[in-house]
Length: 163
Image (cartoon, rainbow, N blue to C red):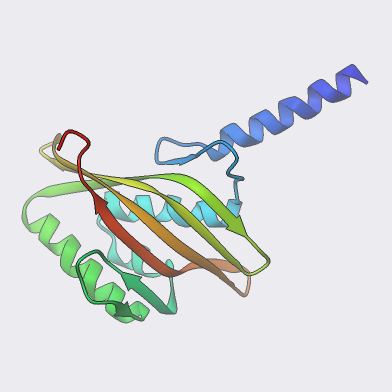
């Protein structure tokens, strides 16, 4: 019986560690969700590569993107355009980007879920970090067929703690 308990504890511990990456941290009590976590992994990859197709295709066709200080963007096509403009601007400046997520709260049902968290966005030039920022976000994920997508994506910037 002790061996069974040890094995089960090892499996649970290993599973919870595997959900944690440097780019996606799930706070204590937040359960991993393989498919939803994969959205964040792809989003992070899209930012590193400045790949607008990868990022835009993580959204449903009828998604709403609610960027801080901007009008609401409706639909994957317009979301694509927004990310294209942003990534082109970053590329033109000779910069690269990385984004990381910390999920503070998550609820998932059969076909819908939501996450509340903090993102950290870093900008680099010639391999050196030149800017960093953080914000809070709320996203709703939706399962369509066998795949999960962002349906609603809302964020706002956080002021640096020393201000």
